[in-house]
Every structure is written in C-alpha cells, then in structure tokens.
Length: 65
Image (tube, rainbow, N blue to C red; front, side, top):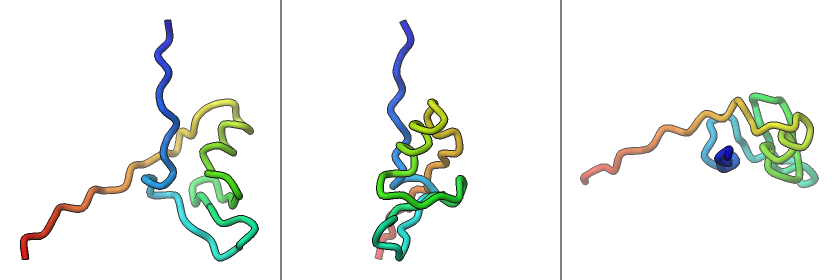
C-alpha cells in the first residue's frame, strides 16, 4: 500500500508570499501565481500532483541575549 505524504505547507515554504491584492492574498514565486487558496492546493488541482517546488524555510536559531 502506498503511504500518503502530507501536502506541503505553503506557510513554511521559501516561495510563499502574502500579496497586497485582497482578491488574491496568497502567492507563490516558484509558480508565479496568486490565489485565494494556498498555492499548493491550486497546484494539486491543476497538475494532479503535490507541489514539487516546495523548499522549507531555514529555521532560526534562538539567540541568547
């Protein structure tokens, strides 16, 4: 049986951004799209596969001040 992987989380992707367009508030630089939904959902609906451009953001190390 094939194991289902979770859909990439756009909020943790380096390509994801918030737009100034209130009609299309979420965007993806990799696919050059803006959408009402998360870009990974639009990619899956259009391509039939999960996003293959997902790149996790670098984690920040806590600073000791």
